[in-house]
Picture 1 (cartoon, rainbow, N blue to C red):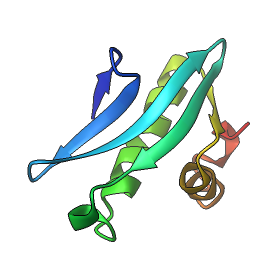
Picture 2 (picture 1 turned 90 degrees about the horizontal axis):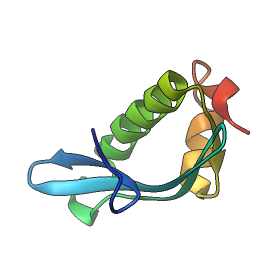
Picture 3 (picture 1 turned 135 degrees about the horizontal axis):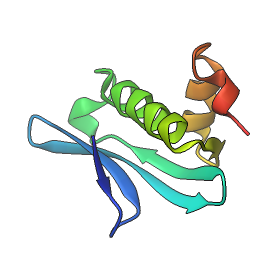
Length: 87
């Protein structure tokens, strides 16, 4: 995963396609606004892999995650090892 801070998004390149999560860093919080996977990658687990990396990054930075994106919120609630990060 690549933290494209200039664009405010985490990116994961898979087979020439980019899955990304738009974010904003606030004090102690990582706000996930939107998670996007190109149509050819939907249903392949690409967004899941990205979200695991996002959660690891938030934990390493000592941040919790505010998920404005429905997918990101549902994903965090479904992950016992990362659920504690959800604001």
